[in-house]
Image 1 (cartoon, rainbow, N blue to C red):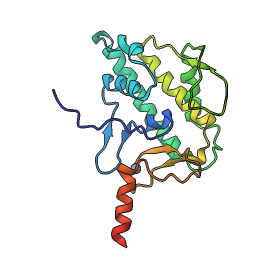
Image 2 (cartoon, rainbow, N blue to C red):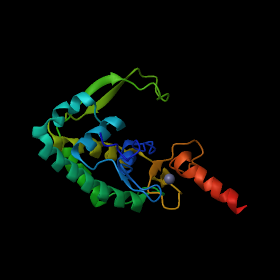
Image 3 (cartoon, helix red, strand yellow):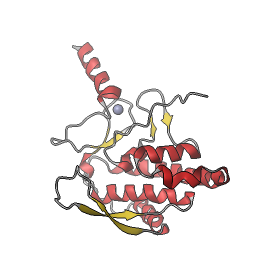
Image 4 (tube, protein in one colour):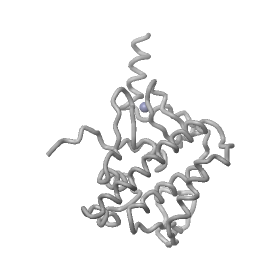
Length: 207
Ligand SMILES: [Zn+2]
């Protein structure tokens, strides 16, 4: 079996929409893309928790491959536009509420059928004592529905995140983005392993 030259996806965004952006990453000289093929896309959706393996089972059948590839291309093209948007608006409060990417996301969201479900609340969310929460569900009936999940994640980021804390890693050429949810908002790196230690070592050598 051919070994995958890619490491596991860098899920450092603290937000699924930023992890989507980071599904193509060039932390240093090497560029990795975790959405190179249809099956790649399915694996990545499972790895990020945006879809479950059982939901995607039918999309792994050979007959679905062309539709899956078409869906992948649409998703990758959206990723490029979403990246330009994030590059433009990150680091300060979001003011460009009429940005074409927002309209595009709305169009995608309107495409998918959806329903609400009551589900157990996440235990990590201590801000509410409610044991149950209302979940928004987009059923996946065909590959072209996959982008709706991603668009929903992007919509949540745009509508709910404080864009002052959406940042590009400070690694000199690192393309990774994250939402800084740390208490004092002093996060600088995608991860210590990839960029943080390297910067510290460089600073140490300078001294
Ligand atoms: Zn980095």
